[in-house]
Each structure stands twice: as C-alpha cells, then as structure tokens.
Length: 175
Image 1 (tube, rainbow, N blue to C red):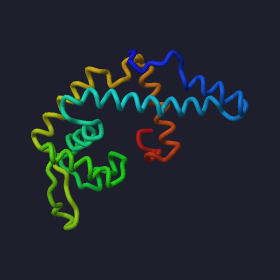
Image 2 (cartoon, one colour):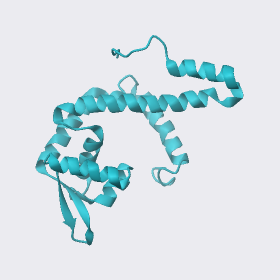
Image 3 (cartoon, rainbow, N blue to C red):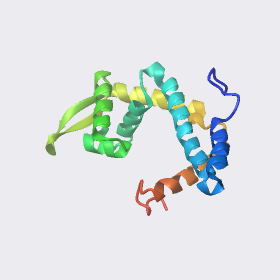
C-alpha cells in the first residue's frame, strides 16, 4: 500500500549498510535492522488500526481495553488487572478507562472485594462498538494481509520466541 509518505528507498536497509560500513559486520547490522523494522512495523500497524477505528472514536489502546473486558468472564476487571493484561503502566490503563467511561463504553465502579480498588465494567454500548471495531479490523486483515497464512504463523512464532526470551510471559505457557 503506497501512501503520500512513501520513500523511494528503504531507510532501514540503508541504515544497515551504513552501520556495517562504519562499525563492521561484527557490530550486527542485521540485528539493528531487524529490531528497527519491528519498531517501524509497530508504528505502521498502530496508525492503520487507529485509522480503521476512527469512525468509532476509538484508538487502538481503547479498543484493546474494550476487547479485554469483552473477553473477561463477567465483563469487568479490577483496574490493576486491566493494566497488567494490557501490559501498560497503571496510569496509562487509568487514562484509557477514564476516556472509555466518558464515551459511555465503560463504567467505573467500586470493587466490592477491595475497598480502595475500582472495577472497569463494559457497557452494552462498549460491547457493540468493540464488535463493530473487531469486524473492521478482521476485514482489514489486521495490517498483515501482505503475508500468507503460513508466513503469519511463522512471524508470530518468531516474535513469540523473542518475547519469551525477554520474560514477557511464563516460558511454560503455550509451550
């Protein structure tokens, strides 16, 4: 997909060539290029997702929170769990949930099991917009439509291996 910002060359590939010329092959130019490519793909995917979800007045982080609540057993989670499962700082989780509450997609209610805690509870409007957003992202191929099915499986496997190496989740989980 070509955009108005499409460059005539791959700046990451060029950086790898320049990196190797400057610091040599032993400096791991392919590692730098791979890591930089992952970061760039993340930027591209987030921009695509935000564009797809704009008609629902959602950003991808808010959509993720709605999906998380939709997937929960009772449509509610303590704020501490929201941040933990979205893998974001508690302040970011609070900001996302506050914005969703102001949109009527989530309610914040006291946690009866923790007098100081708050539960995020998805509303019927939140469920509806999450379903519409999901349909839109499914139709768009989640930004990875350029890959074949087997390529998507392989990419997931490779990225999962890196995440496991960094301790992102229990190494026994999903093994």
